[in-house]
Image 1 (cartoon, rainbow, N blue to C red):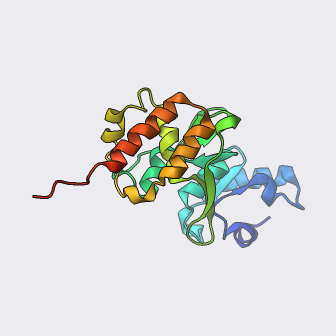
Image 2 (cartoon, rainbow, N blue to C red):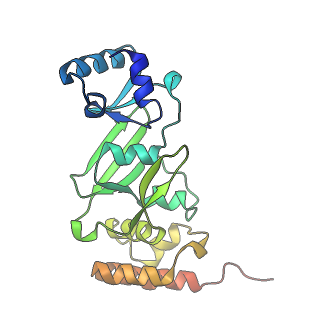
Image 3 (cartoon, rainbow, N blue to C red):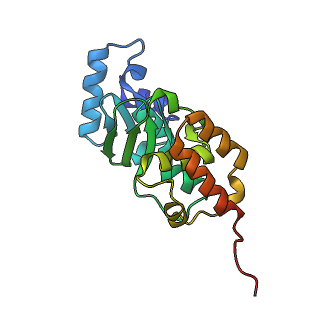
Length: 210
């Protein structure tokens, strides 16, 4: 395979796998060629068998949320990364944080740091497929699930003090009924307590009129 053939086949993808490139080709030869292109800087290896084109050769900019799903599957974007994307918290998140039913892992790549937290299959729900730029998509937690995931994995996350420290904003994006349904579905006393405190915050006035 020549590099121009790779560009034609994978140029419109945020990232691609060895098996995708090897369809109809000799797998061993494809692996050897991909390794050569990594060494000469044309490709970036994200993990074993997963690659992205280096910047000068990209037709599209890879969306990090789409890349996160590809690095570890099944997974969905959650926690502060999702909350920030929805505009529910003001902070910029240094690492892209995800939920997975696979083993927990931190993967550092030239594109950024990806953190995966393990969750049981019983709690692996509450996410949706979302359109990103340039026909890319990702799986991301619904706003309510992203908040509850963060609570679930944080010691004391159900306490009102912790929830206030998040400085939640744009609260109209949180659906009270969905929060309650998700807490009940989880069968977690911690999440039920968290929802009670979240509802207190939702009912508080946003400011004092002078």
